Image (cartoon, rainbow, N blue to C red; front, side, top):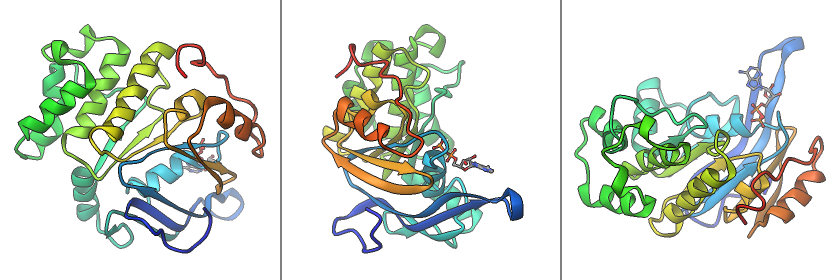
Amino acid sequence: MTTTAGPTFTAAARATDLTKVYGQGETMVVALDSVSVAFRRAEFTAIMGPSGSGKSTLMHCMAGLDSISQGSAAIGDTELNGLDDKRLTRLRRDKVGFVFQAFNLLPTLTAAENITLPMDIAGRKTDRAWVEKIVDTVGLSGRLAHRPAQLSGGQQQRVAVARALASRPEIIFADEPTGNLDSRSGAEVLAFLRSSVQELGQTVVMVTHDPVAASYADRVVFLADGRAVDDMTGPTANSVLDRMRRLPGGSPPLMRGANACR
Ligand code: ADP
């Protein structure tokens, strides 16, 4: 995992010896220390680690939302280093989907309008057949004319995931997408993320601190102190929890969804 050898598969995104330093002198923080990781196409990866281990920083640097101090990162074939602001903005718009803890839906628009909004803003033609397929997969077809306030938290977050999928991005980065949801709504969102990978071939990378959420992924990458320290395929909530306990600073997280989910 921390090897510097390139991946032997086509990666939707990768980081090579990625280092991120904040501040300087006495206030310097090495948030990422030479992390190498690649995310395979049509795979669902969870990034886990104790608070402060660098999860959000890794996501932000790989998604082109934050600068890289050393090393490199790429989305598909496009290296992020050296892209000017305009190209970075275009790359994020065309190749990256985002899902945040807060749903960030526009309250005055319907669910359907929220889903196609980024493409409408970009002046891109909506691929109707694709959006219908997403809506079928998300199971919200009866709710498309509703405004966010008329939807549950889980439904709102599913709309946000559908919005991220609508432009067929190379990769979706989800930052604690179930952090604001009860376990049942969280399970709905996670099931949708999973089916977007299995049925629609989407690549998803999700930052989470919840072992139950991570158990929906195909693979878990563990961070500790800014380093990638382990990699697990076919995770279960228990195997993730067990690994987390043995990480430096990895106090056992709550398995809040354990009974409702898997
Ligand atoms: P996690 O997402 O795993 O909780 P972060 O990526 O947020 O961890 O943070 C990793 C480290 O980098 C922490 O020590 C944090 O305090 C530091 N850090 C994150 N963002 C900044 C910033 N903008 N300025 C200074 N330090 C930061």
